[in-house]
Amino acid sequence: MSDEPVVEYLRSRAQVRPPMDLVGSIADAVEGVPQQRGSWFAPFLPAAGAVAAAAVVAVAIVLLGQGPNFGPAPGGTPTQAELPSAAPSPTQPLALLEPGDTVTIDARDPFGTWGTITITRGEDVGGYEDGSVPPENFVVEIHVEYLPERQPDPFEFGAPDWMLADPGRVPVGEPLEAGSTRELTRPTLATYPGAIDIFANRLEGWLLFAVPREAEDVPLDLYYRHTAVAEAATRFAVREPGPAPDPVAVAAPTPPTPVTFVEKDGYPFTVIDDAQADALFETPDTCSNPEDGYTVTYPDAWFSNTEVGIWPACSWFAASFYDVGEDPNAVPPAVAIVAESMEGDTGSFEENLLRESVTVGGRPAIRVEDRGVEGSGSTNPPGWHSYLYQVQLGSTPEEGLTLVFRTTTEMGGDYNLNKAVLDRIMALIEFDE
Image 1: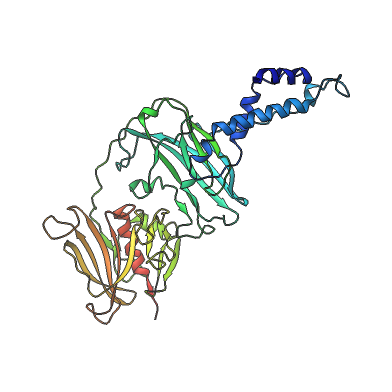
Image 2: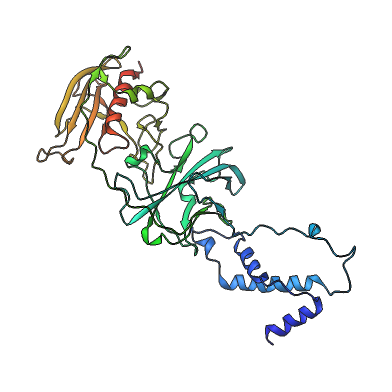
């Protein structure tokens, strides 16, 4: 027997014509039913057979459950005000289509709400001057900030919870990774907790999706779902079809600029004259390295690390938040200054631009700036620069530990500012007795 006689029989018994979009609505509802998540694609590809079967069963239940029409409903025909209001469509996205549009939603884990997330639409840009975006792509910018009320479980959250997709829910655009010069203006969203306390630091950053230009005429949606929550994602409409912005010309690398060293009250040696660095140290913070026995003062607006991998606490400093990454022993690209101890004297094959003796925390030290020179035996390319302090912790430079604080042109942030910040860190460092 075909399905049509059965449906007709049910219709005759119920005296009700099913809404034209009933099956479609049920299919949409079925699509939102929690499913086991193996990857980002899992919630968007339900089995067609399961959806169809659930829809047919649901139609039969609805039709049979209405019962025969024996007369008018008790109390008469309901007015429009008495009719139940329709629930919002589960597929209707929130809109973040214009720069500055903002939405705040719950941050969820398997145990419920653990905080809030504020999502703000940024610009569509043609790229960045650092060359991180190929000219065949443009960038969709989304700013995300988490405000935790408790620790989520599982603890990991952040960048992996977000996806940009087309109407077919196929991912579009590769998110840019942290670590280039754009960190100064567009620090990318990290994976938390990383090496920080999520209650003591702001948890914010940019999702920067590099979208192929051929997708400019495709509407794009942003999806959020915590990696451990097996339920439908929250969807945001973030871009309508339209011309992509023109590519951005790549700027030439900024070479180190000539500097002037000046004396400052309370500093044991001269430091680079830099008003921005001075302003940063007007609001200081401190951290301590228990292994090498020092405490440093650094800008409160910067970030340092807790113990991670082989690195003790207070070994990394950066102007923007950084993600530790898969290898906890690797220094994140966004880190601007690194401190580490090593045995004996530390030489180099680079050309010295500066080399002078200073006293750091009451200990003998040297301040050095090097540059890479072709044919010198250096593994660094010509034009590479390094600015560092070598502090003698042992009895002689050749014996015992040497503490090295350094920044290079390949590290995160602005090299010229990093040098001035490093000067002030070293001028204020204190060692354990």
